[in-house]
Image (cartoon, rainbow, N blue to C red; front, side, top):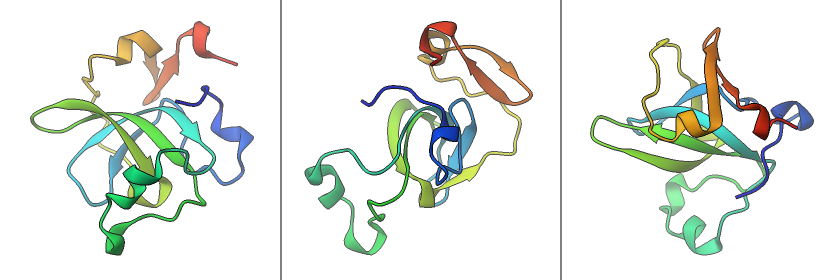
Length: 116
């Protein structure tokens, strides 16, 4: 995992750390806790995605504390596959309290330890 940084450091990043997002195609939502300016996972991971839905590598990728109806997990999602979640509902992922202190106007606020 890359180090945590502010999305304002990359003019291309549409979403920011602490923002609640949902996947464009799959039924999950979550909180962004890290951002890679471009793809930095393994080629095996990338190749495992069906070619017709495989995202471009030259865009931001987000580490997300994700949840769906039945589980919690960490997702690695391309910017093209994320949308802002406008439900206002909290995300109940069990790792959120380790990274975030509170919610301020719908954005999860990082613990001081993780702020640059």
